[in-house]
Image (cartoon, rainbow over all chains, first blue to last red; front, top):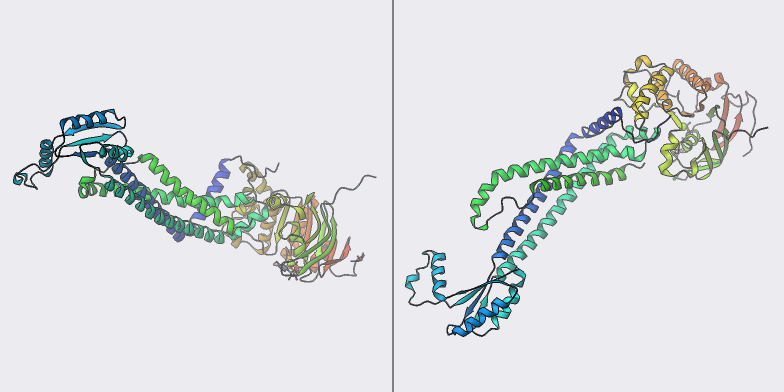
Length: 301
Length: 243
Ligand SMILES: Nc1ncnc2c1ncn2[C@@H]1O[C@H](COP(=O)(O)OP(=O)(O)OP(=O)(O)O)[C@@H](O)[C@H]1O
Ligand SMILES: [Mg+2]
């Protein structure tokens, strides 16, 4: 007869429960707005962070792809030495391509690249040496290949942009650490504000809670509306953040492209739908975890 | 002869010492059969409310054995307390109604928060409202009701889950004589339908008019337990207990 803690839902039950959640939610409007706002800021920061990280990874990997080894040859290098070097490179499985660039061609390329900023006509002789331009199959092999080429006779010097790449990667790591620290702080703040909101709701509803406990409502049933309240704050905050991010992208993207023409930014380095789903899930998680902890602490059931 | 049914409520050697050191109950032994109507009387601070609180596990005994409707309350795990409370209805002096809900909603609330089906709520709420005589005021808010009507609403809420036991802590404490008579008659009717009723009270008129079992407490101990007692000792047939 008495169906105790049955889970079977009917429309009346659902309506009653949702009514209680909404009643909770509208209890401390000011606090709710603060909670939602903090979640939104946290999620916006997280979104920006993920976006910038995606861009950096994209730009970085393209830079790494472009990396090549230049092996400069002695000015008095013999044809036999050049051939030997070419054979050596052709035999190395790590090498994707090796191209001999005679000094004339190197000068022409320099002229083309600098396009009049340096007056190459002033040069009385070609100061550039002959070189090999070598690309490896994977960027990681660059240092090893460079080292083995340097040992060959006729090779004067080997140059590759390792330092630049290392700097770039270091910069990325530093930015990531700063980003994670800032976001962690905001997560904590959002969590504290949500749990505080829940505490106020628990206080505002202490009479209802006392009666629920008196008539034998289970601890889970009593907690559920508060968890839902936290969930709602988290999801609404996250949706707000997604809307802000989308608006910012529409408004700022063309200017960013204009301001950083040489970086070749990817229009969207992340899967947009997955990205939105992740942000909303994170917002929901903040809300649920914060309210769970808060209700546990303020409701002794 | 068959062995008697186990008591609806049974306390054996029950002691309650509050965290602040107050010994509210001291070695209490009490058996209440199914269908009994029992008054708990005694001066202020003698432990009447404390005894009731032990029964619905608002307080936990320090020593002794408590059985309510077959449940070992003194050993009950916290998670099982809601199940115990569904066997009991509890009514207080201050009604404890929710002011922003109507009478109907207040009564239905007790069913809804224990996960009852809407179908059962729709059937049960009108039934108890009819029992307490509040059907015509079911859409009113507690603030629009007299004290007696509010207490009737609270009783309806306590009964809506069909408990076998009704515990009342000074149910007429806030009521005038007319409303007191009305509530007393209602409790009697509820008892006649088979519900075990335990009433802690200071109201001499109620106790003396009803002539039911009277358990007297003094300093946390049961001093007398009379089958058809009066509020003041010595007016009825008295069985003095040692202890
Ligand atoms: N929560 C509590 N913590 C500590 N001591 C308490 C608590 N509740 C009651 N007491 C003490 O326990 C004793 C019994 O209190 P109780 O409320 O059971 O008495 P009572 O018989 O119901 O009194 P009254 O007739 O005034 O309602 C009193 O001395 C009281 O001060
Ligand atoms: Mg009392």
